[in-house]
Length: 263
Image (tube, rainbow, N blue to C red):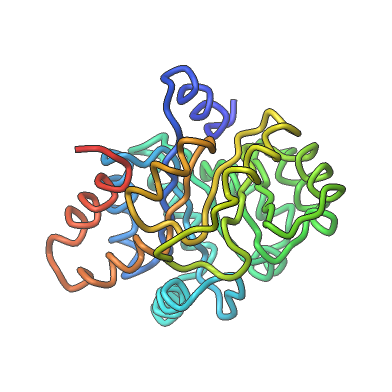
């Protein structure tokens, strides 16, 4: 069974909701990313997304854009992050996903990417700039290698397209709380709950909410209606704040624990 499916099955059994943490792979460097994954897996994260550095991250706000560029400046590439996953699999079985724009996957080749990702121990891939209607070949290659392709649903998604995505979804559905780019926000739209419930009526696949989540209160509110919550920019901002600190890993770990409601 895919680790994502196993994680959500256990969460349901335990009566809990998922906390999904995003890290830009290679920020501030790959060694730190590896330590952060291990730390966050012990401090409340149930799944972890690894962002593949890319030069034109159109779905990301300034915080993640800056971290992605910093990783690119250190020459972090898709192949490096695959090796990072392989190394992590010796020490943790937490579900790991890539958040990657399509270009790095296309350059590697969809079939090669899927095979290499499976060999290294990846569980899922999210491709913000590849609509599911145009991503059938990647989804097929991923599915043949036991990897889930995670689809987005936006507040503006119409009912026909929503039904199509809900039917094809694997792993979980990523609901964007806001129409726009990533980035921490003080408040989230009041209609998030109604949108999430609407998706849940169409599928048994878990629905997780991301984009804009930045406070423990927002995490709790979303977890009260959704199957999980995703936090990215707020964590990256905390990494930036402590990137020169020898206690970076423990500081970020404590912050994630506060978001996830762990001591």
